[in-house]
Length: 182
Image (cartoon, rainbow, N blue to C red; front, side):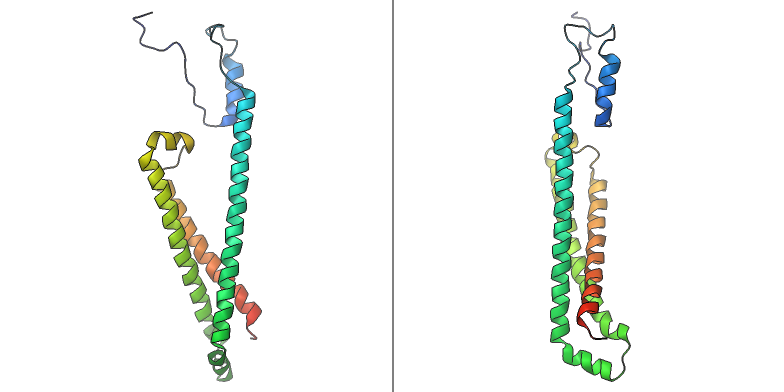
């Protein structure tokens, strides 16, 4: 009627997409549901959405693995080039009896700094894109990526920085084991 301020329908938002079928089964045959306007749950549409989300996640992890491999390879090659460029200094250090950590330490630090710089750049890009998405289209972005806030973006940027630091120092250690005689 004209005096009723409430709509004749309810929009239900679920926390987990798997709950949609159970909620539909719960209310579909309820006496309060008007048979002229039944529930609008389309199992096929939700399955397609889940398939797209799963495919996107798999593609994202594959891309992440590929980029990690590229980062490790680039760092290992740069450390190999640094070892080759400093081979005379390394030989002198070894001849005078320098401990292994003193010879290898600068290369590990170089790899860690390279990884940290790459992590800072990637973290800033991650944070910047997320912040731009939140600021530009707040409603649309939160519907597309619920739960993603500035705090989550900052945490993701910090994780990216730490992963870059770990990849840089780890790949330099691997490269040192492969390309140094001691």
